[in-house]
Image (cartoon, rainbow, N blue to C red; front, top):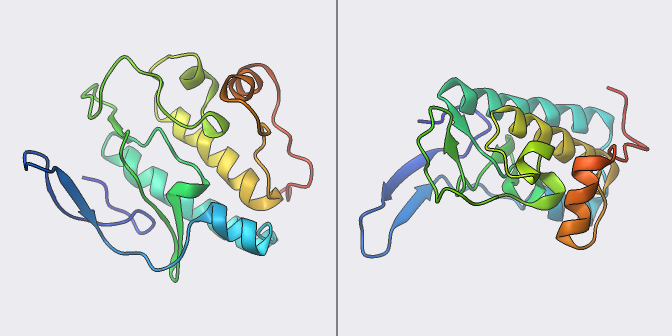
Length: 170
């Protein structure tokens, strides 16, 4: 159901196959985490372009009632035509239809919204929070909530403000 310019296009799937599968378009280029590790933080205009592209992807998801729940630098491919959001493995339909196992806190600690970190189901707002953390990472080269043990990172996500030193004000 998800379209948009900055989401990898769905091609085929068979969830009832002996080995269930999902096929999406191939995006030539590495992920944002590796790109920043190799090239450093994105300069101003490139960071703004990334932010706009990721926002477009989230709008496309939201328009069909889908919440990604795990937007992070490794789930953003740096394609030739701009960023592409991938890995809808823990996606959730906003209408309440669970597309993955329920009752679990899912996501990646450095990129989770506070409500997600404390086990609340959340809304599309959790993707907006992850969008901000991902854009901050792209612009500064570091997670806005630091590194370390998952429980320590989750504590900072819930209780401390993000480290945005060096972030382009745009």
